[in-house]
Image (cartoon, rainbow, N blue to C red; front, top):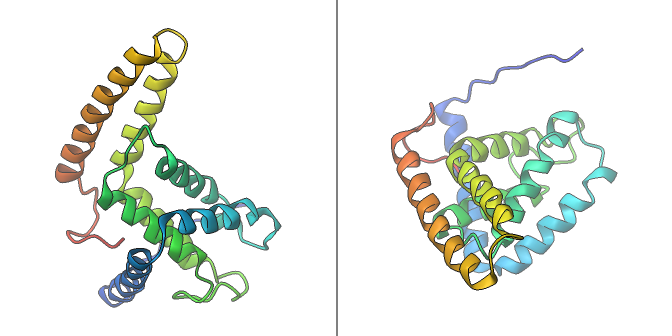
Length: 180
């Protein structure tokens, strides 16, 4: 039997979360992106061996997909969205974040919350990337390489425009100021 728990995040909690995410953003500004991605991949690949609650385990594939998106050279994710994902990965990898990861049963709760907030905030980016991947797959066997590159670039720019428009108009209950 599963139990659904709703959590109300207060302004005080939001301030603490923003401060923690600012620390993660400061880290990515002084670190090499490749190193962050490599550390995240190692952590996510080894996650099955960790003792973690299901509410965290269910979110790991979504973080893996975000890492895939960052590494996809055809997609060219805009800098602002890249930084949000990188900051969330840094936060996820920090064992001493808001709730230290070694607290039994709850240590990864804040990591799961950050992941959910990231997914909410970037839902249009994720949709656009999925559309891009489907389109790219449809071209793989039917179109010559030179034409494929041109079509992918055109499609990428169209999808980037769509995701930017949707992000400006749809906040989906998120605060006016970004948490991530």
